[in-house]
Structure formats: structure tokens, C-alpha cells
Image (cartoon, rainbow, N blue to C red; front, side, top):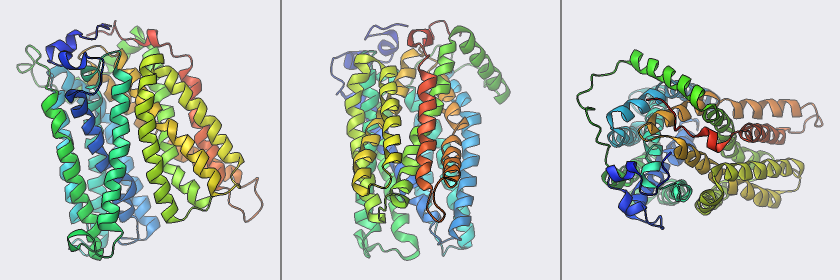
Length: 464
């Protein structure tokens, strides 16, 4: 693989003159990173903290029924992503249309987020119909967001050099955390918390949440513009005249890609498998962290929100800082340091589960220090080994392998809680045992990535 900071892929796209500099703070990198910043409008607001909570709050159906329905909708979305992400990525590669499809998929997400304004309990659809509309919008948003992420991640090697890739990836990922928190604070204090918020918005008929979704759509839409201007699509000779590719042909080419990967670089396949597992464990840390904080350590709802804000700020700063370490010692080392630290810290949380809120504040924040760096380094590891013109294809596989094992954290968390119930006194909660399930997944990912050899994962011989 060409390691010249002004390599061919950058010269062709007019980016080398800028990001060949020692600093990463140039307009191309900042434009690219702003997409991560804006994407929190969907990740943090729609999927995690606001709209999904609104759908399962009991306004549309009983909480358990709404939660089960939402889970079904997101599961279906996950299957669609797993099936289509690799072929959408490879199609964009072959036509040099990565930037176009990033814009298309991003603004579909923006549109779907804005349409969440129409999900209200008192709509003509009825509460149940409105709930299913919201689930459909959220599920479709997840699908197109993942497609956009494939195109976005594929740009990393074009806006950075081998010497700056870790810092650039860390900057983007860190800004995603920080942007999410800033937007959540604006929405919480501007619309959700007050009885009468900005512009006279109240909670009647879910108006405070619905307006928040409009603001989120605007936030993401504006943040995505710079990267579409700063990173143009590739000009591939004959791409516009190439015949349209059927789905069957795309899947045949995908199968050939996987065979070629296994034959020429099996360690890249090992990395995809290992990263899928530890990334699911990392997702589990945030998914179940709030549950553990409230159920085991006695955090109030307000405490959980404050902890979430602080945790995301810590994660954002740590991810940006660890980017320099990624460039210095390599992404695999950063991943291993993060997973080892999180495994030990998770065990300490389990051991000291009766020690009170202060212990969780310390150990919980230590845990969040390493989540972002592991995710960012995983992205930069893959970006470093992919040959020019195949980024979308391989990042599509990256998305698919991640979705394929996304059941692990919920399953192991639940199983660990069930097993723990046999070891705690009757009538005592065993919820804290769920920590061991997440730790086990992180440890499994650590064991799987140890034998991955970075040099042997390079795809220099990857067939065309």
C-alpha cells in the first residue's frame, strides 16, 4: 500500500495539498468531521435519548408493548442493513459516487427525522397508528444512516494521510460525542424540560419532542453540507457509461470479494470478526450503562441525565486525545489498551456494586474514556488497509459484520442477570450481574484481535 502522504488517491481529488501538512486542522478535515458532529442529531436524539423514549413512554401504547414493537422495527432495519450495506458500498465505489450517495443517504435521514414531527398521540391515525409511523420512520432512518456512514467512513483515507489518520478519525468521532451533548442540552433546556419552552412550545400532544425533531433535522442537514463541497466524488474513466448493475450481479461480486479477501488477506477477515464483537460490547456499555446506574447504584432520572452528559463529554475529549496515540503506536495497540482497561474497570464495577453512587461516577467515567478511542481506532485500522477505490465495499462489510452480531450484548446481559439470580439472596436484584455479560464480550473481542497481524491484514493484493 502506498504510504506517501501525497499519494495518488489524494492528488486525483485535489486534497493532498491541504492534508499533506503536519496539522490536521485544515478545512477539508474540519468539513469531514462536521458530518460526525451533525450525525448526533440522529444517533443521540432520535435513536437513543429523545424520540425512541417518546415512542415507548406510554403515550401511544403500553410501555412493554411499545418497547417490543420498537425492538421489532429496529431488528427488521438491522436485517436490511446487513443485507444491503456491502453492495451499496461497492456500487458507489465502482462509479466513483461515494460523495453523491453520502449526500443522498444523509438527506433521506434528514427528511425522515423532520417527518417525526408528525408522530403525535392525537393524530388521525390514532395512537397505535402514530406509534407504528414513528417506528417506521426510525427504522428507515437507521437503514439510510448506516448507508451514509459507509460512504462517510470510506472518505477517511482521502481526507487524511497514514501519519494523521488516527487523529483525523478521533477528531471526527470525538466531535460526534460533543455535538450530541450540545444538541441535547439545547433541546432539553429549550423545549423538553420547561413547561413552556422556546417559541411558546409546550408538551401538549408531544409538541416539545416533535419540535426537537425538526431542530435535529436542521442541525444534521446544515452540518452535512461542508463535506459534500470539500470532498468531491472520484472521476473514474468509463464509470458513467457502465451498464446498470442488477442486485444478483452485486451479490455475486460481493461473494467474490469475500473469497478474495479470505485468499489474499485472511487477517482482514479476522479483524472484521473481532471488531464486530468488541464493537457490540462497546455499544452495550452505553446501552446498559444508564440501566446499571439507575437500577444498581440508585441514580435518579436527573442523575442519569447529568452522568450521560458528563460521560459523553469525557468520551469526546478522550477520543480526540487518543487519536494522536493511534498515529504514534498504531490502531491495534489503542484498541487493545482500551479493551484491557474496560475489562478490568467493568470487573471493578461488578465487585464494588454496593459501594454507592460515588464509585460508579469514578469507575463509570473511566469506562467511557476508552469507548470512543476503541471505536475510532477500529475505523482507522480498516481505513489504513483498504486499497484505493474499495473503501465503500469493505466498510460495507464492516457494517454488515457489526449488525450480524448485534444481538450479543442484549443476550449476554440478560443471561448474566438470569444466572446471577441463582447467586443472590431471594428478593435481591441481580441486575449488576449483567455487567459481567458486557465484560465477557469485550474480553472475547480482545482475545480475537490479539492474533490479528496488521501487516498481514493489508489488502495490497486484493483482486480487482
